[in-house]
Length: 114
Image (tube, rainbow, N blue to C red):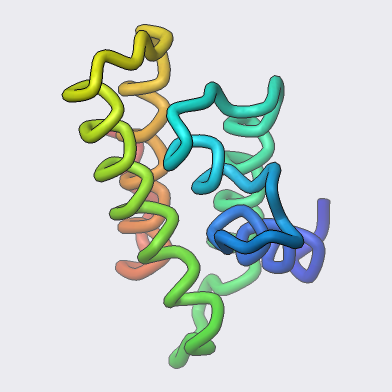
């Protein structure tokens, strides 16, 4: 995966629309599990975007908004689903933490692996 593909993929996964019914956020919002491999691909794309932006002095608004939404709203949908009794897989909580750390790393310019 190259930077351009990763960027487009992340924007798509953070977009909730009728045209994108399988996006990560749409699935979580509907209380559905992510598509198999979706989280792995999101994490890979985040790493590729981090590498592609290494040393960048500015970031584009569309990407940054998508990263913010992906990180914050996925957690909100997860917690709302939990309150409504959705039985999420145990690893999804950890995956959401990994997504948040990767987004934080992109913003900071330093990879956070804790």
